[in-house]
Image (cartoon, rainbow, N blue to C red):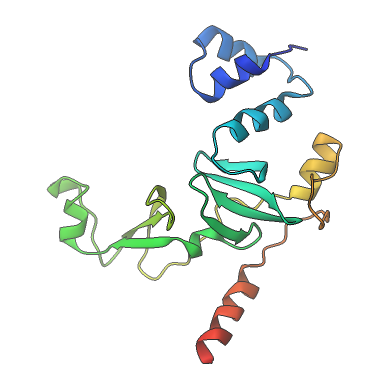
Length: 188
C-alpha cells in the first residue's frame, strides 16, 4: 500500500501533481489515512471553523455544526440539513427564452424553450455557480448527491461521524418535510 504525505495530498487537491504521480495514486491501493489527510487539506482552504465531514464539490461541503450535519458553501453560506435538497435553497436563474439561450449558445445551437430550459443554481452567499442543467419546463429539481453518511463513516472509515448526534445509517431524504414546512409557513 502506498503512503502519501500531506504535501502530496495538498498538491493533488490543488491540481499540481504530475501525471505519473496521479496515475500511481489512482492505480495503487489507498492508504488508510488518505481521507483524513484530504479533509485536513480541504479544511485549510475554507475561511470557517466547522469540521468538514464530506465534500460535495469544490464549493460545497457537508460539515458538522452544533451536533448536526449541514451543507455549507466555501463562502460560509449555510444551506441547512444535508438530507434536504440544497438545490432548492439556491438562487435559480432560468433560461427559458430564445434571447436568454443566445447569451450562452450560438444561434444555431440554441434550445427550443418549449422543450427545454436551463436552470442555473447560484450560491446566495457569494454568487458562485453551483450547478447548471437542462430540463423540460416544469421538471422537478433532482437531489444531486445524498450520501449515507452514517454507513460511510462507520462501515468504510470505521469510526463514528465526528461530532454529529444522529449516527443513523441509510439514505434519508428529508426534502418533502422541508417543502411541507414551507407550505405551512406560506399559509400563515
